[in-house]
Length: 268
Image (cartoon, rainbow, N blue to C red; front, top):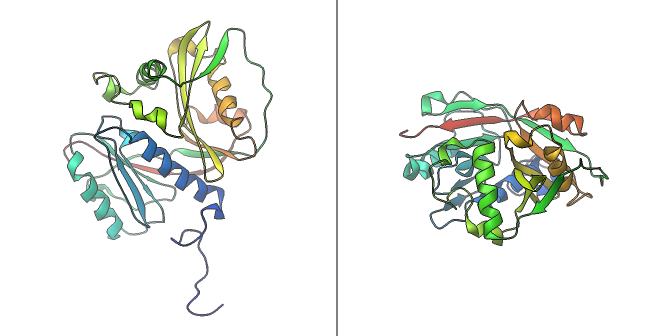
């Protein structure tokens, strides 16, 4: 080891994406955001430090910046670049996701949104029975996408998208991306929706929502297994709320670490 070859941290711009499961997730999540921001009003920007996406729509999780390296100081210039990018989107919520702890950013106009848990399940194919009446269906048509959008808005819920026109939260162009979308049905009625993205050596269970009519009917679990089985030779990962974490743990996912999520409210 020479002086001009510093020890690898796992987060340098030239280091391999497959260095760790966590690094694979970071780049997978960045691709998820690029897919979600596929509508006509979307903007994207990226460099070695951050990927920033503005969908042009009201859904906060589609207007997100994902850090690609740790930030230890409020004076880090990458934070200014994030603020500058979202200066054109002050009419809607914007998010900043870090897989590491962050310093207090409240003086910069951010509000702490929480610390979602990162969960991982080792590669394995799963043979799981589904309850009577439960069905999982791939979303391949615009009509199905509109149903998924309605279930997502009402089931998550995504309150900021309730009055938006169809296609604002889940644009039609999603059908031309590599994002896998599924509906969960009970007795033929769509009651749950989910998304997954298979890239960079992990399957990212990146979204799920269930209506009250589908709760405790086994449809959420069926959607988890469907997404795990779409690439059983790779780890399955997700970042999840405290409400959903016990369900993932029950299904063999391991809680690994907590992320940091900051929110920038409209007008700031």
